Structure formats: structure tokens, C-alpha cells
Image 1: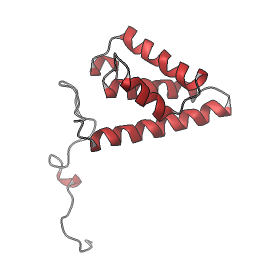
Image 2: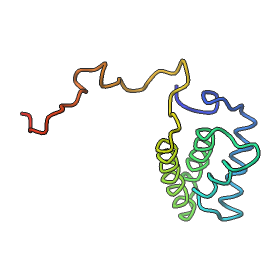
Image 3: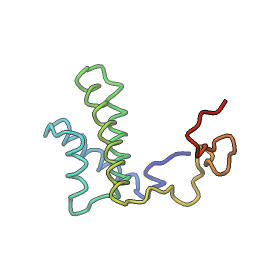
Length: 125
């Protein structure tokens, strides 16, 4: 189970249309991935930011399997810009929470004593 359109609220048709818009802007209009995300988010029917990032990374994943080197490089830029966009959202105060009912992939540090961090600066053995 992961994050995806059915978990962040988009229906399949809406997600497909968003991916098509992203492909057009990347390959026809030759926009940088971060500019594509910003343009999509500025539109009149802007998707949820996580839906936009999911669509971009879906397109990037598809491009990474193609044999053209330029498309594989563009795919890498898409993943990098998607990660940066998520960081910018978080820094701007957007709450990046999993939808209700979705389990965490990793235990939180508070629930797993082996994952807790020391608050001292002294080395431990």
C-alpha cells in the first residue's frame, strides 16, 4: 500500500489528465519539471500538491524506462524537482500527513527504542 491517486483523493481520470498535461509541458513545451509543477499548481483547477507531485513522478518513472538518454536525464530531473517541491511545501507549512487509514512504512522513533536518538554530543560505544 502506498501513496497514490486513490489515497490522496484523485480519481483515475483526473490523474490521467494531469499526467497528460505534465507530459505535454515537459516534452512539447520543453518546460523544466519544477516550472511544470508550479504552472499546474497555478491553474484554475489546481490539484492537491501531492497529487501533482505523484503525477510528475509517475511520468518520470515511465520516462526512466525509455531508451533515449535525454528522456532518462529528464526523468532524473523530474524526481529531483519533485523532491525539492515537497521540501518547499513542507517549509511553507503544508502538512505532509498520510491520509487516514494508511499505515506508516517505518515505525516512528518514539515507538521503536532501537531507533531513538541520543541528545548528547558525546560519542557512544
